[in-house]
Amino acid sequence: MINSTQSSHFTLSAYFDTGLVQSLYFMIVLFLYVFIVGANMLLIVVICLNRSLHEPMYMFLCSLFVNELFGSSGLFPFLLLQILSDVHTVSVPFCLVQVFCVYTYGSVEFTNLAIMSYDRYLAICHPLQYNTCMTSSKVTLLIAVIWLPPVLAVLVSVCLTASLQLCGSIINQVYCDNYSIIKLSCSDTTVNNIYELVAASITLCAPVSIILYTYIRILKVCFSGSKLTRQKAVSTCTPHLASLLNFFFGSFFIILQSRFNMSSVPNILRIFLSLYFFTCQPLFNPVMYGLNMSKIRIMCKSLLLDFLRISGRFK
Image (cartoon, rainbow, N blue to C red; front, side):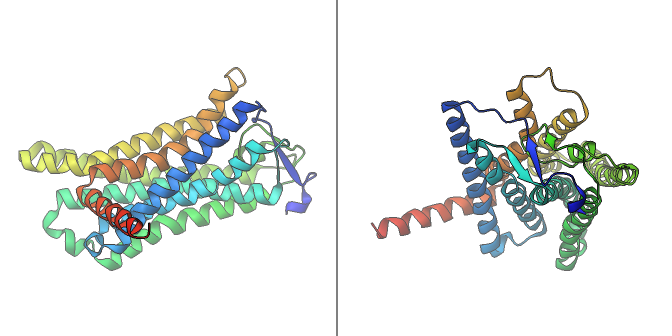
């Protein structure tokens, strides 16, 4: 358990004190967090309040935006406190909670994108059967699949990490990550390593298989279908493909940061690489979907105009 560790706190060594620049970093991170919360909350409210958007595609989008809020809220408030702090330490229990939030966010994000690719596959390749296939009960089941398996898998991983006896307390990151904690262990980590390998394989293989299969089928329909079919496929799949590419770039940076020696890389670049996944994805998705999907764009404009109109009356 946690009390078997030799230290009750971890030290995050990737931070550096830079005086006035430190305040600038705080303002930048605060602005990013406020924008992420505002943009994702706006789209969640728009989807929930408008019955015309209570369709499978938008329900999966709503799940995606909820996950962006979950992941950013598990990281950004902590970053803001650490930037202003002179001592960059974090308690072991809180560190494990952050590991749970960060890893759950990444796993849910990938699963959500895979389910969304399946939804696009049905809409493009089987449009006549779409409504019979995507019933409300099936949408509910798919949203449960998006969240429950990743949450349980990460929870088991965190519990295994919490049982380790640690002989170090220095994490060379700006936030807590599971692999760095396992490297500090002076007890046997065989079970942890095997579980991480199996869980990572399942977490990666299942979504990747769904994404590859669905887009191969979508490409076949595009090449054999009419020009109108190709235009529909491009318009509905472009935001999703862009989000997938951004996700893969972020994941690549995370793997690069955790698995290889980055001591020769400038510290500011290492921090940027480690935060890209948790910053760009929550920023990118609401902007991309909000601008590219006409229904959401129109509803957002209407909601903002109503808000400004009401605000003007109270002045």
